[in-house]
Length: 291
Image (cartoon, rainbow, N blue to C red; front, side, top):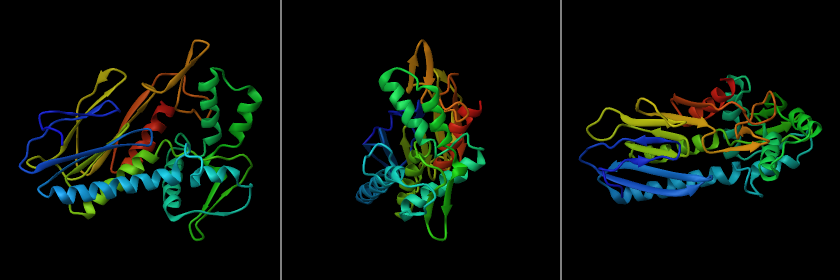
């Protein structure tokens, strides 16, 4: 349990400012998706909060199990072996995540793109080897990327890669999707006065007792931003403050620019508020790319 006098420090540089209220605070946290997921809820029924917490973490873990591009046997990574032009069945859980990601790819004209897996793989190799890919390798990966080359059939629940070498990466939206799923669990249990934080994402439900909003302070690239007031909404911060590589004296962000195939070379950060964490997560990434 976290004292009400303490603030909850978030990895994204945001802080949920302390609130006062009559209901007790229940807090829980677990490592997942390469970061720490934190839950804070107000309730007089601690046993119910514990039950909801267990189910919420299970929901997030289920998303990670199918959508991770780090887990070798995840459903998402298994698609990288698919032949082009052949429809392939997708689980209900992953298909809904892909549909949502594809929607925001279209909405951002590809500045957020779940099909940049070939380029993400090259970035990780560059980070390990401290060298950029050669022009031919980069060109091949760019040809194999592009959300319009991914076909999703809602009626049959299948995906089709239209060209060889495609690979998916939901890194720019999966944490937000997990945060949305976790809050949904708490709401089903009648615990709507809940916040979920994970990496650069904050998802909140109804306000704490005695308040009409959650107050979220955001800090990016060393600059303290004005606090945000949120109710049943989300805020995401994206940038290269923590994830970047330097090669030959040049800094490359972990955020891939689909126009160059490489990490962004201009330091940028974006904070976006939206009705859901999936949307704020994807749009924050897109805003870093578009500038």
